[in-house]
Image 1 (cartoon, rainbow, N blue to C red):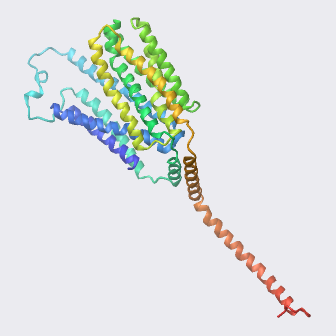
Image 2: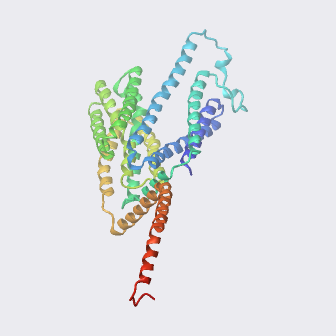
Image 3: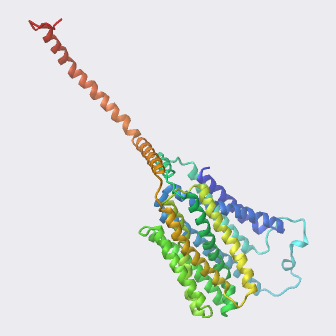
Length: 422
């Protein structure tokens, strides 16, 4: 399917979910709308990566970093918008007289079980959802507009040239990247989700300080993704992955060793957030250098990331509850950092293995065909004019040469004593 249609429809589904979720009055309807929202976000997460690779290929590392910076920036700003809406609501409630019989406070979904949709009591939250939904709708309109723009022939020939790139162990690389993103994203979401509770119960911080600790983790995460746009222009994706793995390993080990110190937790959280920032987009750009990532391939390792995001925080939450005296969250981050640091050299070794002779010949032939098609399409307009000019030149030469040839033949026929004149 066309990339712009897929992304436009996914953003349209996101818009529908954002507009209808505040109006849901039954748990079943809320689950259905959240499922629609999750499906749309999953398509967007996968399709956006594939679109970047389709447009720029293995040269799209800065664009991939910019895409994931927008994810991090939105994840950082959207909760602030919701918190501002909640703060306005709480301040309004604090300035009103308590009324135990106020109808707005006693209203509940159980009062009218047949009611499926209704306006929420908190209009500030409604405006928070509506503002983000309107933004996504505007972006979907732009994507639909791009669908009607004709794709150039040069982009098609470039895409056909990229399809011929395939590593010797293509499927093995995808499986290893599946595991790599499973543990990486799982550790990222686990730390971001539980650092507030961990800081208040294990470290002993106040709730306001713990909220600041959560903010500095996601703030450094978003800031380093923004800086990675510029770093990606001068550093290879593999170099950025190695640096990120080293930073994650050092910072998680630092957090485990000094888990009771508030200052060390602040420093470790900021460094850990900065180290985790560039791994996911760099991993996609790195793999594209050795093998072409199709839509199915991208969906495969994004599923691994989503499974890690879903499974690891759930398991760690149960274990942390059973062993409250142990920093299970920090142990998870350290174990994930060790696993990814060991796994990446194995992936690099598989990616750089030489191809077989038969595969090399097939790749060479396919590359030559793609380049030939690219050359023909690029010079299609110029060739017609060039051939027309050559036709006129041939006609002029015939006009000039023909009288001389006729005169020469006449001289030969009139030459006396020639046996071959007849």
